[in-house]
Image (cartoon, rainbow, N blue to C red; front, side, top):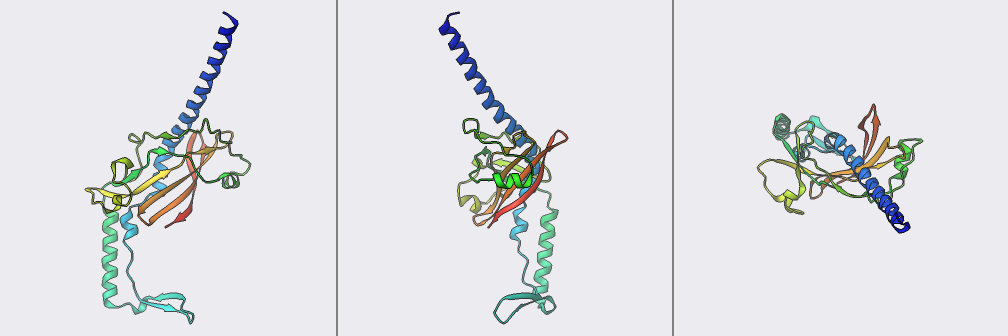
Length: 233
């Protein structure tokens, strides 16, 4: 083997090892995301019918001298308000007893987190350091979610199957469409025992909530350690 051939062989090995590292990093994160996705959906998604089923006014609103709300005196509820409350309770019970699937539009592309979450991570997982992101290895990816079994009545459909923008909320569906869920890439500690990611659930054009999610590996399995709200609309 000539000197040039040896150099070429070494370079090929280095490039191959680099590619293997990229694949293994993405595969590792994809496997963790697949494992915790059922809990992520269960922890962040809701049946939007319950959220949009607002309770009716019941009683007299009491304000202070500056016009600030103090309390509601329910003893002064009118007969109409009492009937409205009964109807609201009945509708709420019907929704809760409905056993049909709750369909969530899922953004299957797991994208980069634009937020700086280092301080939150190291505050929550004391003594752990967030791994520095190598942009060359920090690849976005498509999560194959179709065969992931979810908890409760939730079922995921690819967001691409739904109308875009505001039309997604204006369209009438033959199923119980509840909202749109998305999650960012997971950032891990240097030992890959802890992780952090963001997520969100949109239940309307101006209805939704964001989350910061802390995960950890315990007894060989990944689990959600804590979910914190970051924004609400």
